[in-house]
Amino acid sequence: MKNKDYSYLYSNWEDTVRRRKVFLSNPVFVKGLALAPLVVAATTVHNGILLCIAVFFLLTPTRIVTNLITRRMSMPLKTFFYPFISAIVFSFVYYYMYKLLGATVLVLGVYLPIMVVDPLIVKNFEKTRKESLLYSIINGLRNTAGFIVACIIISAVREFLGYGTLLGVKLIGFAPLPMAHNTFGGFLIIALLSALWAQLIKNYKYKVEVEAMHDERYNRDAD
Image (cartoon, rainbow, N blue to C red; front, top):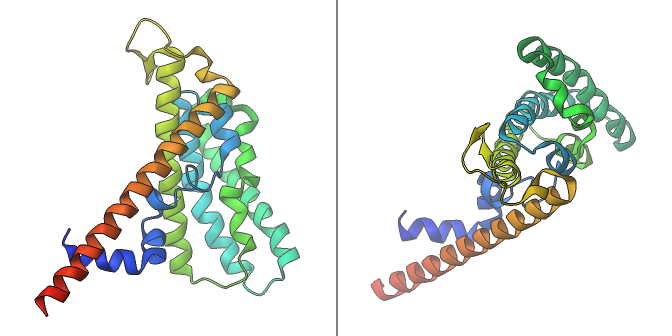
Protein backbone atom coordinates (compact mmCIF):
# COMPACT_ATOMS: atom_id res chain seq x y z
CA MET A 1 0.00 0.00 0.00
CA LYS A 2 1.33 3.45 -0.89
CA ASN A 3 1.78 6.18 1.73
CA LYS A 4 -0.92 8.35 0.17
CA ASP A 5 -3.39 5.57 0.90
CA TYR A 6 -2.48 5.70 4.59
CA SER A 7 -3.19 9.44 4.62
CA TYR A 8 -6.67 8.79 3.36
CA LEU A 9 -7.25 5.95 5.83
CA TYR A 10 -6.19 8.10 8.78
CA SER A 11 -8.06 11.26 7.80
CA ASN A 12 -11.22 9.20 7.16
CA TRP A 13 -10.82 6.77 10.05
CA GLU A 14 -14.55 6.33 10.74
CA ASP A 15 -15.13 5.39 7.11
CA THR A 16 -12.14 3.06 7.28
CA VAL A 17 -13.61 1.32 10.32
CA ARG A 18 -16.98 0.99 8.61
CA ARG A 19 -15.52 -0.48 5.42
CA ARG A 20 -13.13 -2.80 7.28
CA LYS A 21 -15.67 -3.92 9.85
CA VAL A 22 -14.51 -7.54 9.91
CA PHE A 23 -11.24 -6.47 11.54
CA LEU A 24 -11.63 -2.94 12.92
CA SER A 25 -15.19 -3.28 14.19
CA ASN A 26 -15.60 -7.00 14.64
CA PRO A 27 -19.07 -7.75 16.07
CA VAL A 28 -17.65 -10.26 18.56
CA PHE A 29 -14.14 -9.15 19.52
CA VAL A 30 -14.87 -5.40 19.43
CA LYS A 31 -18.61 -5.04 20.07
CA GLY A 32 -19.11 -8.08 22.27
CA LEU A 33 -22.17 -9.41 20.40
CA ALA A 34 -23.35 -13.04 20.24
CA LEU A 35 -21.40 -13.99 23.36
CA ALA A 36 -23.97 -16.41 24.79
CA PRO A 37 -23.94 -18.94 21.93
CA LEU A 38 -20.18 -18.58 21.50
CA VAL A 39 -19.36 -19.04 25.19
CA VAL A 40 -21.61 -22.06 25.64
CA ALA A 41 -21.86 -23.75 22.25
CA ALA A 42 -18.70 -22.91 20.25
CA THR A 43 -16.56 -25.56 21.96
CA THR A 44 -15.46 -27.30 18.75
CA VAL A 45 -14.95 -26.27 15.14
CA HIS A 46 -17.88 -28.49 14.19
CA ASN A 47 -20.20 -26.57 16.52
CA GLY A 48 -18.71 -23.29 15.34
CA ILE A 49 -19.49 -24.15 11.72
CA LEU A 50 -23.12 -24.84 12.65
CA LEU A 51 -23.36 -21.42 14.30
CA CYS A 52 -21.76 -19.80 11.25
CA ILE A 53 -24.27 -21.44 8.90
CA ALA A 54 -27.18 -20.25 11.03
CA VAL A 55 -25.87 -16.67 11.21
CA PHE A 56 -25.07 -16.60 7.48
CA PHE A 57 -28.68 -17.41 6.57
CA LEU A 58 -30.23 -15.45 9.43
CA LEU A 59 -28.48 -12.09 9.86
CA THR A 60 -28.55 -10.49 6.41
CA PRO A 61 -32.02 -11.76 5.35
CA THR A 62 -33.49 -10.52 8.66
CA ARG A 63 -31.87 -7.14 8.17
CA ILE A 64 -33.13 -6.83 4.59
CA VAL A 65 -36.71 -7.88 5.34
CA THR A 66 -37.07 -5.71 8.43
CA ASN A 67 -35.50 -2.76 6.61
CA LEU A 68 -38.19 -3.00 3.92
CA ILE A 69 -41.07 -3.54 6.36
CA THR A 70 -40.20 -1.12 9.18
CA ARG A 71 -39.19 1.97 7.19
CA ARG A 72 -42.17 3.98 8.44
CA MET A 73 -42.63 2.28 11.79
CA SER A 74 -42.09 3.86 15.18
CA MET A 75 -39.40 2.54 17.51
CA PRO A 76 -41.81 0.44 19.69
CA LEU A 77 -43.12 -1.35 16.61
CA LYS A 78 -39.59 -1.92 15.31
CA THR A 79 -38.69 -3.43 18.68
CA PHE A 80 -41.43 -6.01 18.14
CA PHE A 81 -40.92 -6.67 14.43
CA TYR A 82 -37.16 -7.33 14.46
CA PRO A 83 -37.28 -10.45 16.65
CA PHE A 84 -40.60 -11.44 15.01
CA ILE A 85 -39.09 -11.40 11.52
CA SER A 86 -35.92 -13.00 12.86
CA ALA A 87 -37.97 -15.87 14.30
CA ILE A 88 -39.77 -16.42 10.99
CA VAL A 89 -36.51 -16.44 9.03
CA PHE A 90 -34.93 -18.77 11.60
CA SER A 91 -37.77 -21.28 11.33
CA PHE A 92 -36.90 -21.80 7.65
CA VAL A 93 -33.15 -21.80 8.35
CA TYR A 94 -33.49 -24.38 11.13
CA TYR A 95 -35.79 -26.58 9.04
CA TYR A 96 -33.37 -26.76 6.11
CA MET A 97 -30.35 -27.18 8.39
CA TYR A 98 -32.11 -30.13 10.00
CA LYS A 99 -33.02 -31.58 6.60
CA LEU A 100 -29.43 -31.29 5.36
CA LEU A 101 -27.47 -32.04 8.54
CA GLY A 102 -29.91 -34.18 10.49
CA ALA A 103 -29.79 -34.48 14.27
CA THR A 104 -26.31 -32.94 14.36
CA VAL A 105 -27.90 -29.50 14.70
CA LEU A 106 -29.40 -30.58 18.01
CA VAL A 107 -25.98 -30.59 19.70
CA LEU A 108 -26.23 -26.80 20.07
CA GLY A 109 -29.43 -27.13 22.07
CA VAL A 110 -31.22 -23.88 22.84
CA TYR A 111 -28.19 -21.81 21.86
CA LEU A 112 -29.00 -22.07 18.17
CA PRO A 113 -32.58 -20.73 18.35
CA ILE A 114 -31.47 -18.13 20.92
CA MET A 115 -29.73 -16.40 18.02
CA VAL A 116 -33.19 -15.10 17.06
CA VAL A 117 -33.04 -12.48 19.82
CA ASP A 118 -29.28 -12.02 19.98
CA PRO A 119 -28.12 -8.39 19.59
CA LEU A 120 -26.03 -9.51 16.61
CA ILE A 121 -29.29 -10.08 14.73
CA VAL A 122 -31.73 -7.56 16.19
CA LYS A 123 -29.54 -4.65 17.35
CA ASN A 124 -30.13 -2.79 14.08
CA PHE A 125 -33.69 -1.87 15.12
CA GLU A 126 -32.19 0.84 17.38
CA LYS A 127 -31.15 2.92 14.39
CA THR A 128 -33.46 5.80 13.68
CA ARG A 129 -32.08 6.65 10.26
CA LYS A 130 -33.30 4.79 7.21
CA GLU A 131 -30.74 2.80 5.26
CA SER A 132 -30.86 1.76 1.63
CA LEU A 133 -31.42 -1.83 0.58
CA LEU A 134 -27.87 -2.02 -0.79
CA TYR A 135 -26.41 -0.76 2.50
CA SER A 136 -28.48 -3.33 4.42
CA ILE A 137 -27.02 -6.11 2.29
CA ILE A 138 -23.42 -4.85 2.48
CA ASN A 139 -23.48 -4.13 6.20
CA GLY A 140 -25.27 -7.40 6.93
CA LEU A 141 -22.63 -9.36 5.01
CA ARG A 142 -19.83 -7.49 6.80
CA ASN A 143 -21.30 -8.35 10.20
CA THR A 144 -21.80 -11.94 9.07
CA ALA A 145 -18.19 -12.20 7.88
CA GLY A 146 -16.96 -10.68 11.14
CA PHE A 147 -18.92 -13.19 13.19
CA ILE A 148 -17.73 -16.13 11.08
CA VAL A 149 -14.07 -15.13 11.46
CA ALA A 150 -14.43 -14.72 15.23
CA CYS A 151 -16.47 -17.90 15.63
CA ILE A 152 -14.00 -20.09 13.76
CA ILE A 153 -11.05 -18.66 15.70
CA ILE A 154 -12.79 -19.10 19.07
CA SER A 155 -14.07 -22.62 18.37
CA ALA A 156 -10.69 -23.77 16.99
CA VAL A 157 -8.80 -22.43 20.01
CA ARG A 158 -11.29 -23.96 22.45
CA GLU A 159 -11.30 -27.34 20.72
CA PHE A 160 -7.51 -27.53 20.72
CA LEU A 161 -7.13 -26.38 24.32
CA GLY A 162 -10.09 -28.35 25.64
CA TYR A 163 -9.64 -31.62 23.76
CA GLY A 164 -6.27 -31.54 22.01
CA THR A 165 -8.05 -31.95 18.67
CA LEU A 166 -8.99 -29.88 15.63
CA LEU A 167 -11.99 -30.85 13.53
CA GLY A 168 -12.01 -34.05 15.54
CA VAL A 169 -8.46 -34.97 14.52
CA LYS A 170 -6.16 -35.72 17.47
CA LEU A 171 -3.20 -33.31 17.40
CA ILE A 172 -1.71 -34.01 20.82
CA GLY A 173 -2.31 -36.69 23.42
CA PHE A 174 -3.64 -34.40 26.14
CA ALA A 175 -5.87 -31.34 26.65
CA PRO A 176 -3.69 -28.27 27.37
CA LEU A 177 -6.57 -26.48 29.12
CA PRO A 178 -9.49 -28.83 29.92
CA MET A 179 -11.72 -26.02 31.19
CA ALA A 180 -11.67 -24.45 27.71
CA HIS A 181 -14.81 -26.38 26.79
CA ASN A 182 -16.89 -25.14 29.74
CA THR A 183 -18.61 -21.78 30.19
CA PHE A 184 -15.96 -20.16 32.37
CA GLY A 185 -13.23 -21.27 30.00
CA GLY A 186 -15.22 -19.85 27.11
CA PHE A 187 -15.48 -16.44 28.78
CA LEU A 188 -11.78 -16.48 29.62
CA ILE A 189 -10.64 -17.40 26.11
CA ILE A 190 -12.93 -14.90 24.40
CA ALA A 191 -11.72 -12.18 26.77
CA LEU A 192 -8.08 -12.97 26.00
CA LEU A 193 -8.72 -13.12 22.25
CA SER A 194 -10.62 -9.82 22.41
CA ALA A 195 -7.72 -8.19 24.25
CA LEU A 196 -5.29 -9.48 21.62
CA TRP A 197 -7.62 -8.27 18.85
CA ALA A 198 -7.81 -4.81 20.43
CA GLN A 199 -4.01 -4.65 20.55
CA LEU A 200 -3.78 -5.59 16.88
CA ILE A 201 -6.21 -2.79 16.01
CA LYS A 202 -4.22 -0.35 18.13
CA ASN A 203 -1.01 -1.36 16.37
CA TYR A 204 -2.64 -1.02 12.96
CA LYS A 205 -4.04 2.44 13.73
CA TYR A 206 -0.63 3.55 15.00
CA LYS A 207 0.97 2.30 11.79
CA VAL A 208 -1.59 4.19 9.70
CA GLU A 209 -0.99 7.36 11.73
CA VAL A 210 2.80 7.12 11.39
CA GLU A 211 2.62 6.47 7.65
CA ALA A 212 0.16 9.36 7.21
CA MET A 213 2.50 11.74 9.09
CA HIS A 214 5.42 10.54 6.97
CA ASP A 215 3.39 11.21 3.84
CA GLU A 216 2.52 14.74 5.01
CA ARG A 217 6.21 15.50 5.68
CA TYR A 218 7.15 14.12 2.28
CA ASN A 219 4.56 16.34 0.58
CA ARG A 220 5.77 19.44 2.49
CA ASP A 221 9.38 18.72 1.53
CA ALA A 222 8.36 18.21 -2.09
CA ASP A 223 6.65 21.62 -2.14
